[in-house]
Length: 232
Picture (cartoon, rainbow, N blue to C red):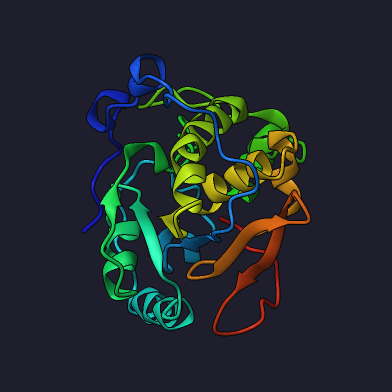
């Protein structure tokens, strides 16, 4: 069942301005791994439609991918598991055998007026090679977000994740664009670096610290090698 777009208030995003920072700074080079699971395939992701806050369920193949992701992470000892509140992420966590705590900051980029539309359709309308990372989104039924606002949410998530990585491994089950931007923030890169790394539905990626630097240990690992870049 596809549920309509939510609003900022529905997911409590005002926590960005009200939630206090931790009492201690992030630990130096925590030894745990940060495991990223992008949710399994949905009808919208299969069609390349921008799927932000619309609550779209997994397809049968999406459920298969989620189970496969669970097999890939079975050997990890997670000290913290967080999921987006959207059903495609929570269902992925469930099928992967992960008992996740919901964190509203993990929702996907709010695409505003471009929600549900493909890049090809938007580019045809605008007459140039639009991308969300380069040109941004417009307001619609929801306000939309800039890439920097998504990065600010990701940074808040990392203030919780990094201390937990000192105690063990951490898993995040969320969405393609959000996890790509979170990875850029983790790597201490500009948020728009995320445009250069793609992430397929149902894939697993692993971040860690290597020789005192944040690093990618494994990226976009799934049941099969991608033939074309992900369009969603």
